[in-house]
Image 1 (cartoon, rainbow, N blue to C red):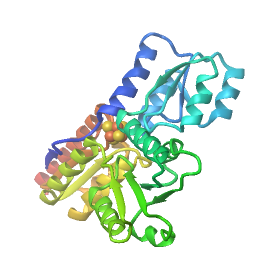
Image 2: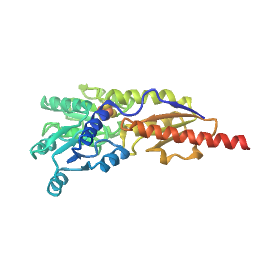
Image 3: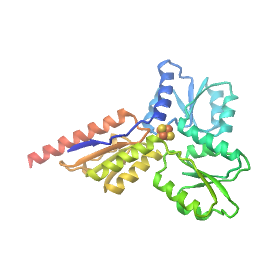
Image 4: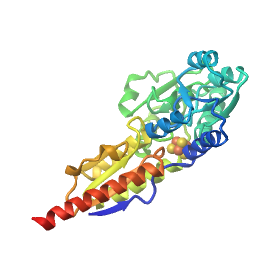
Length: 299
Ligand code: SF4
C-alpha cells in the first residue's frame, strides 16, 4: 500500500493559536479556566483538555452556574467566535478573557458590523446553526435585515423585492464554487451587490490539496471531527473524485476491509485535526498494509 499525504492539511493558523493559548494554561497549571463553547470541533482535543481540568460551557447561564460551583478565573472564547453581546456580558463577570476567536472570523465580524451600520442588509452564506454564523449575526446592527442561506435554492425562499443593495459574506469554510454561484445569481436581480471574500486561506488550501489528490488515489481518508464544517467539506470534495472515501475522527474508526494490499491511499485532515491524531491514523494504515501484504504472500 502506498500512503500519500495531501500537500496541505491539519491544524490551521486559527486553531493552532487557540489550542496553544489553552495549552499554555495547562502548562502553567492555571486550570481554573473554562472555555466558552468547545474551543474547536475536535472531540479528541476537547477530551484532552477535559482530562487536564479545562471543561467548557455552552452559554452564559452555564457559565454563571459554573462560577457558583467552582473557582473560575479565566474564560477562553472558542475559535469560531461568539456574539458581541455575549462577549460583553462575559467581560462584565470579572474574569480574565482570552479571546480565541480566529482573526479570519473577527474579520467577518468587522465587515458585517461596519456595513450594517452603513445600512446594507447582509446575506450570509453558511449554516444558520453553526457557532461561527451565530456569532457573526451578533455583530449586525439591530433593525438591519439579514439573511442566511446554505445554498442557491435557499435564495428562492427570500423576498428580495425591497432590497436594492446588499453585502454578501460567507462562513470561512465555505466552498468557493457555491459562493460564486450565489453571488452571480444575486447580481442578476439586485442593483448593488458587495461581496467580501471571507473564505479563509487554510480552507482554500486544504480543499485545493484534496482536489488534487483524490483523483489520483484508490482510497481517501479524511480525518476530523464529525461536527467540523471544514472537514465535512473536504470529505465532500474527496467523495466527488474518489468513490472509496471515508470520513473518520481517529484511527479507531478505520476498517481493514476498506483497503486492498496494493491500494494508493490518500490522507487529508480538517483544520482542527491535531498532528498526533493524523500520525495515529497513518500508523494504523501501515499496520493494515503489513497484514494485507502478509496475507497475500501466504496465499
Ligand atoms: S479554518 Fe480558517 S477561519 Fe477557521 S480557525 Fe482555521 S484559519 Fe481560522
